[in-house]
Length: 257
Image (tube, rainbow, N blue to C red; front, side, top):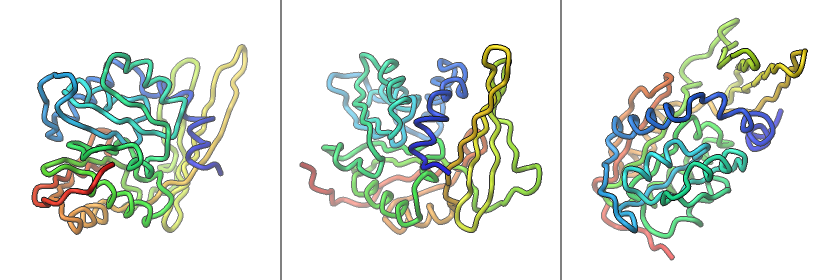
């Protein structure tokens, strides 16, 4: 079994754009999702009038959408392959691209953030619930008064798929097939990504697996509320859970360098 970093660097990252499909359409969906979550659209200005942080930015679909809504964005991800594609698409936009563990974001953020997003099942990539708890605390500390935090992730905790339901066809075309197999443990699910690709006259199969947390939505919701945010749970695209939280009451802000 690989680490999440190795899995993305060598297996999933190189085919991620193929998996997403039409990137232009995906950008429109990301913009619509921000609108649905209630992320304010700001007037364009130089420098931007708002600040945003995209944790687990990947290809940059939400980073680009945030920048186009008037925010200066810090986009952080540990996968250099994906960040290379983000840089190419973000030319001319106020996006600072950072290759690092998302838990190291305080070293790259110099002022409170108006919007922080951690979308696309990123939270389940963390190694433990303690790591999620610590990240949420850092996120809340980094929010401006009135700032918004949003996360989307798959609920592997409430339901355990059994039998053939554990085999999920992610995408296929004439040259490639991506199938996912889920293996459930007590507090983690092992994700096996099976890529079958046409090379010359034959099909070649590559398999890599990595662990994800079985992260309960109610646990995340209660953690954010305990930290002083008002939070709600919604259903996001692709059946993910979406948690949207706002810092509406806390007045004291951390000291930034």
